[in-house]
Image (cartoon, rainbow, N blue to C red; front, side):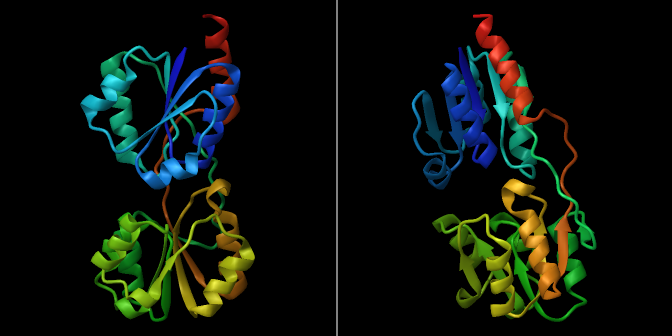
Length: 246
């Protein structure tokens, strides 16, 4: 039985290994070489790297017993395209959910543009931890106050340059990070505002929020898209049932 996972997340990697251990032929699709590096190698898991067109997704799904969308909670366009490909290929679709975290005292923003609009009326350094794709929304702010923490990849660094982030303000590191390291960075760069997404516990959100409170920095959180799906163990249980029916 073949199961296709669109991954690139911590829970996607864990699911691929769990399903392979159960005996499923597991195919994982990741968008970038960085994602493939993080996915690593495991017996019974085939990793495909590179963004795929709608036709390529549909072709890949042909004959699969199930497709699991384990992409990032904010990757809404990818989720929509995977759903459409599953419908076209006649393959059952399941969304693997990542638990959300409480954001007490945070400023909730609809998107990066709203966060940037809020910051236009403020002073003080800003740490952007939303990912490279959102950096352009902050380009109208004083670039000198912007610090971007991004993945250490060519793609991320190119996005920083395109958004005009000064080189000295680029923090290229792979998370998630401890509260201690987050707090050290906030102090090092005199950060007054932290802009982030609710990446859940797997994405290090609790540690980031705690560090902001510790350092007296305001936390701006881009609101997570509303979605429905299933938890990790529920999807594993469904796959076990499919394997027993083979």
